[in-house]
Image (cartoon, rainbow over all chains, first blue to last red; front, side):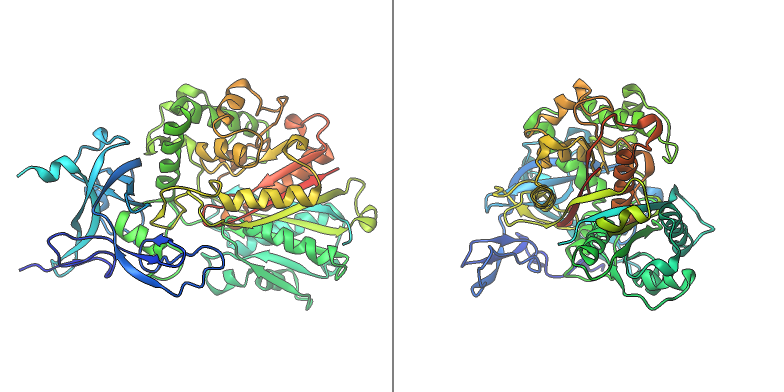
Length: 146
Length: 393
């Protein structure tokens, strides 16, 4: 049985039936960041009340592109099997924008304003046949279908 | 502070040179600058070198490594890496070395041999490094980031794909006049729009290539400049900026941005330009021409606004009116820009400064801007550090 594991640990809750991106928030200055390592503060905030937060799992696409050529390593893919994929910047109600690949929609149909949900999908199959996972954004409607 | 002038510039042509090392390129640029100023290497009392981050230990230690090739003399040499601002940061540090009175002369140098294709990760795979995270988890190349800013611009300001194509056309018309440019073809809007998307809405001809190159400048106390040149070019302002809290840019190599911005887009570039303006005692209205970091057509338009030459969204009109052409109100990238040279990260800023010097000396040939007295250069800064220079006759 193939294992499914985050390609990088700690970026989203896993395993989970309702996975969420894990960001970081400073209660003193109100600054929100993603991921946890991207801790930012207002100038002069001493950052004494910082904790991890789970970000909203739904948002709105505010910008996007289509990656038409295979990226270099450390993106792991088979260049011969490359298919262009969408990348979108999603605004979450928490007050933060987070980019990610767009899935579940033909790249030519992607449009600004699309309502999206966070999904966890396979990024690549590793040498042992296990699935390395990442976060992606999928049209909200797709998810509500049975 | 002592007034400072540029007395010599030199470059190795931009291109791909598989048979050369970064040291070969750097030595050429330094010798060119020395010849231009009528100096010997032993006349150089201090140097600042951009680091070459793709080249192992010698690259990180580029300055002393180059001195080995030129003949070691024991002078103080500082290595600097400041992302796209690297070469102009070296120029700034060389400026300070002379302005402070520590040395009468200082050399600034930048050299780069780019990896093939898209720029990839610099350094090790670190799970907490957002640059590693964006490559591994999203597969987002640099053009993908620029494309997402370009798309936002289309939504907010009505910029069209024709505007982006026209930016390439404008830069290519200048590059065609520059014998030093690598790409000298003059493009039409139709040709640009027929090139494939790399990252929609940005197309192949709208994104600069990654190339190799080296550039150097020799700075000198202004009151001694006449010993070396009949056309000293004064350093009026140098800027260096970092990001400001609340910058809404989805910065290269990050995976989040604030939903509501409270600082300018590209705030590090905005801050750098303001610093240079203040030091020079001039404003955007005083600048005769500008070299912007046209890594993509989005940059070309955005930087016109970031530097204060137009209100947000208005650069499109300047472009379409011909204002950004040589002979127009504000010639942009008279050299042809990164669009016509390709990008060599650690050398880029000094290539721009060389164009300022040539224009201000009146040595720009077919692309000469008549009566040019104040020129400005601005590097890219989407990693949170940017630099600017303002030079005058």
